[in-house]
Amino acid sequence: MRIVDFRITRFQFARDRVIGDSQVRADDVNVAAIELIDGHGRTGLGFVQSLFFPLPAEEELKRVFRAEAWPGLEGQSAGALAHRVTRSRGGNTRRLSIPFEEALQQAVWDLFAKTTGQPLWELLGARRRSVPAYASGLDFHLSDEQFQSLFAAAADQGFKAFKIKVGHPDVARDIQRLNLLKQAVGEGATVMVDANEGWTARQTLRNLGLFRQAGHEIFWVEDPVLRDDIDGLKLLRTSAGPTLINSGEYLDASAKRLLMQAGATDMLNVHGHVTDVMRVGWLAADMGVPVTLGNSFLEVGANMALALPEVQWVEYSFQNFEHLIERPLEIRDGLIWGSEAPGHGLVLSEAARRDWHRPDVLERSALGEAPMQCRLQKG
Image (cartoon, rainbow, N blue to C red; front, side, top):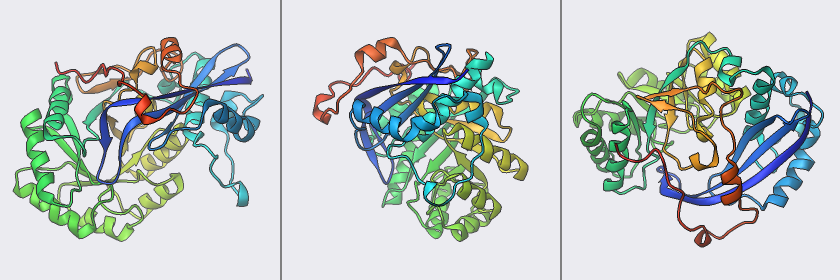
């Protein structure tokens, strides 16, 4: 069945906490739901997010979408779009004016899976229903009290692995945060750190040594150096001892391939672009490189994680988005579970469409209170 229409719903609201790392911070949410509709009325859902600045008003979103994206979607079948291989050449190698790309991949695959009556993870070939999730705080700008409260709540909810943000100019502050994490979650947890390209290779080796001296074994260090510092990443792979190097977050699919071919990472970090994740995931499996699934909107990436044999972990960051959908993916005992419903499992809430719809751009001061975060309650 062909795609015959689309719908865009713009949302803007305050976060329940400041999120960020050594390089960035954000305290509001700017997101739009993209729905592709086929001739039988089935809907494929994707989300476009702007992390630091408000998205344009809804009418402008529709105008740009209709001009730039819709000509390649109208009258097409979702299955054909999902599997289509194109070769970019010259001037057609460019981003859309508004970053609709990830949302379109999510919506196309959601609609395709619904036409087959299958959950997306099953359509993608998964042979398991759950994958381990780690609790990620996006915590660099939180107070020590907020930091400990967040991770203690995560431990109470069954998480056994935890990732914190590091990269403070004074490494003693990073060590203090690791100490606070251990107090919050107890001994024996799996601990990862994320420097968001804040260090050089030699700083990374020095800081990992200081962490060990302070009694902290680090399972992986994520994006410790600049994304294209291949020599630095290769040095770390051979010199960081038991700590694994997890990189690739900031690279496109082609650059991820080059990163693996250079032997410059122990683990490959991917995100929420369904087609791109599957293609680079197949290559990682062929090369024997483990894959980690970083943050994806409302954990839609769990579908790909379940289907790719090299994925060992999915990131969960307690972001207050769950009021936007009818039912979030289940997370239980440190595992995230694929939905049994056809599609990727996320359905836009009619209550959210009514109560949180913001067609026009609002000033930050007009956003009011943040929605309640249903998974951040301790106990």
